[in-house]
Image (cartoon, rainbow, N blue to C red; front, side, top):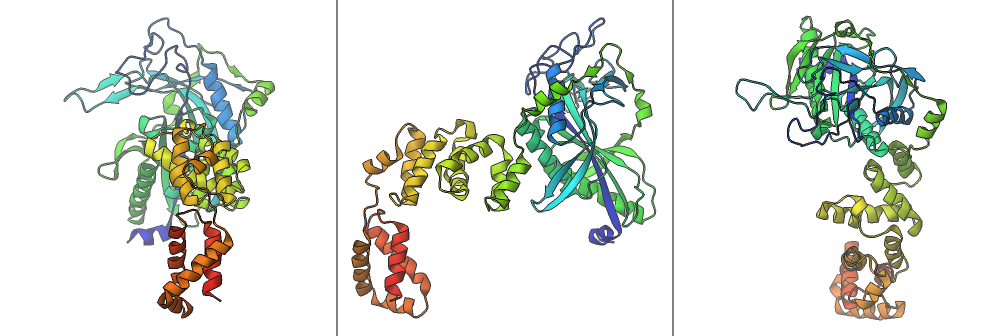
Length: 486
């Protein structure tokens, strides 16, 4: 049976566990910092190495970050919560257990909307967001017979966001993960770089017959490190399960790994249950107490989030969805766009400048918007030169804009004057020149009046060349059409 036929019979059920590495100046319970790409075992201390007598000390910034994330996506914040020991053999976590949270996490239930392909809105229930420490890294491909351990990452603060099984396709899972990445970057609590392990995802996947309300056997896919691979892994695993169920085979509750090179999931180990972890409250850490005043203080720090901006750009500013998504995707980029709007004639004009010349410059120079040299008002002045008809748009983009990038303190109009770019053509001059062109090219005039209306562009080009780019394109087009149609 084909995949499309199986998909018509069975429904995929997905829940995600998203691990977000929190951006702070030290680990969550240990004093040292962590920097990605450092030589192995450079960021360690007696606490992260679990030396006898070394005690954990909570990083309060990690707690603030996780509360901020919870508030941003509309979750409940627990006034009282506690840390717990999750007992499990971690070869790359020296204590042999993980400091995490159990029945009382910092952040409780909530709900987050996603848009699949920028079109279909769906609400996803959040079960919890808890704070825990990361494990180190086991390296299996350097030594021929031994695994090596790098403890740099051990003890780094993680927010683990757990959804309820509300997702119904790999595409929905990808959209959810992309939205979470945008949010944590907007909040500046994580860099969200999946390729560096700052954002990792476990996917719990099962299938059930269409119309059923009984979930099938759940399989967990561990540590998928890109959104595209999340989509591929879930697509493969749901297909594997559908085929097995359709053949009458029993699925095993297990943890599987995603083999990128083969494009397949493979068995890793039996799936543990909560009982296997033997949770109990951590005796060396006090319970977490968060006051209403602190919650309000954190809430005041939350910026307007990407989804709110995206909807405004589409619904109010009438910007195309793909362009609106690009504008809203990064906080600093969106901030620049919004700050530019008052200095232009419309949000669409501002969008055209930001998505056109500005983004091109950023890509060519491998910079982010914080390093863009032209301030919003100066770029707005250039935009107004074009709007007023003083400068041709092409001249503005190709001559004045690059000059401003090199010398951002210069005045756009001064640059235009120095380069003889101020448009001086009057309507009567354009008419005289167009009448001469009509006499010069009678065959083209005849073809235009016979139905080949695209020949208007030929005459526009002739006039623009005659006036050396100093003619107003709008006036040129009006004169061309007026005389050709008369």
